[in-house]
Image (cartoon, rainbow, N blue to C red):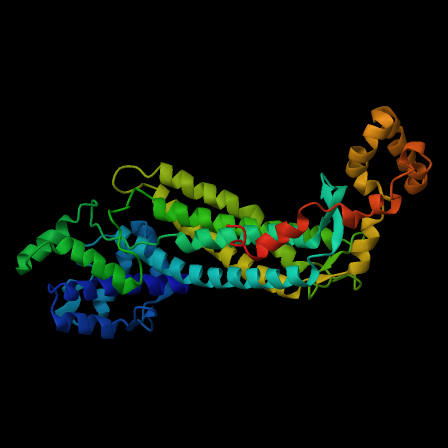
Length: 432
């Protein structure tokens, strides 16, 4: 969502409108051809390029009217042949053009974000197949809890990213074409004056949307900002899902844990031994900022007064652009992080054994409490926590004579449904 991309989209939105007027038989073919040629129309996918509009000058001139479309219209009309100038910005308003342009830029960004989320899913599937059975320490509130598997943990990551991708795929990005007050009155008047037959308004909106590669709106959304908030929510969810992965990777890559390593670590300007988890850091930065941007979009939507908001609409522009940028960066870094993610199996095993078997205390409580009672079991765990040999303490219990203590203390024998959780993440349709 660079300034240049937005400018190109604004010009594209203006040219697409002229082309739509010609499509419905109101504008002459010559006007559409002259405007398209003068302003660098390529096609629906690429829009306009090499249109000759000075970005810096346009930005400076935008302050006076509160949006860039006002000076843009004058600049475009000065470029196209005089015979076609009257068709530039015909029947529309600044908000139509700016809303449509932002949706065009968003649609290109969403395509890239979806591609990166898909790549992240694929990399996670490979990771689960390679490391899914590795037993590791689950941590709750920062402490060792019970055994889990890397597959179950990564399955949670995969489910989160998949749900975010599916939601983003479902987001509708509509064009905006409703005229000055959202009634399409000017469009109807222009069509009637030209002698066009039938209801031109809906046909023009559909042709305009098609020319921009966007959905045709069922109604104007000048002050009903669901396209912006729904897009924002989907982007925030995607960044959330990637942020969860980055948080777990950053934690597991700490020197004293060392279970996971990014494929390429970042260095330090002062400490040459460091291999910082830079991609995780950048994703976490995005994840910390994204929810507040999403909240700003909802606030702007709620304050979209009358038939054109006085400030709320303007607040959306930089907010949505920044949120899209964060999603683009987070998804690209996420895909690359997961493609290169490595496991230190020795560190996983070392950490799993740190508590000397206490990581299966939950299981021990289920098995031993009926045999020795809650009070004695509590004393047993306390003795082991104080440094006692847990296996020896259990073996010394007369009531435990028939138990296979080694098997009882083996974390691999207490991973519950971890394997099936990972399997369902790999194939979510398997149990339907």
